[in-house]
Length: 441
View 1: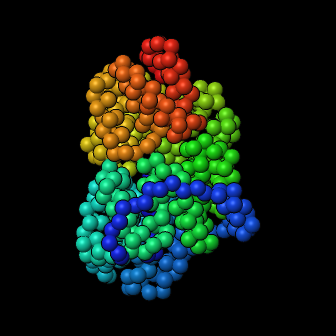
View 2: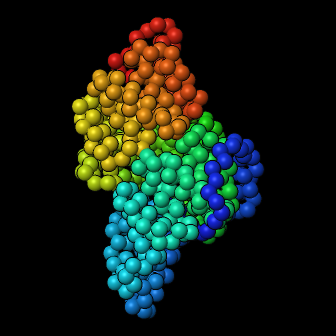
């Protein structure tokens, strides 16, 4: 999902223009190299800000602003590293800011960033609404409203908040990235790329992690439409800006899988997991080891993933969706998949959680209810290849072959090289021949 991004920037609200764009990506890639910007800093932007804030606190510990600056820098460091312990450190630092300046608006915004980073989306939405009422023209608060509403499945509210960001300050970085993510969700990949390219141009050259993040998002969009070579070049550029960047390493591993270079993908994920491995990244390693034919190592990685993910099941920042698919597709424990899915659906009703819930229902043989839940997920209007694949399988199991064929074809149109594309083609061939859907996919 969209990670929080720093904002800079009112007219009447307007509908987001979802028209299709065409991006001269080759020129964009050429410009990256011509400007000579692919030079890594020895110290990250967040680390630089941490050092400056700590010096300011040491110089005058009774000023509140350096504590706010340090809290923000620590929260940004969490994104740079995927190490959630920085959020805990940021919370401790903010206590001093609130002690010195109770109710400070800037400190409350940093606290909101931390809540989103910890995936406490419902609480973040409530606090963002309060701050928005207090300061209706603050762009960053609209960004937080966008993030929380997307994660909770309130897509109309998210779109309105993102539109306000661009109305209040056209071309602001945070508004562009959020607008891009919403366009991607609605299937406008070219429009999403256009906004991300604009966001890259708006990002200062000194913000190397931000620029690497934007390049990684553009690469993701290219890979989603089967443009493997373009995605590869963008990710190489991102890693040139910010070496060993966990987001870029994960995405480049997906490129290597699309190229059937499974051993290379394993190497990239090993590098990614050397520091602050997350359950999701360990799960990705297990799946990739399976593809590489290293079944014993895959089994060990799956066991580690399950152990780590189960420790987080009851907290907001969890890997429950990954657990659902693990139990449904790998461990063949559909009852546990459904139990975890019901836990998570109690917290949030976004399309991705509904999709996982539908798949758990399918795995337990509750096909009619699975169809109802996947229809609910699709009703939001989001266009995701995985959703359509699941909808195709579920429809086929209910003997609705026309719907099954339609959904599977839509999945392949959206992402011809996705993780389900091979299976989708096999099922389509079987449906065309009048065969039954296999028990295990």
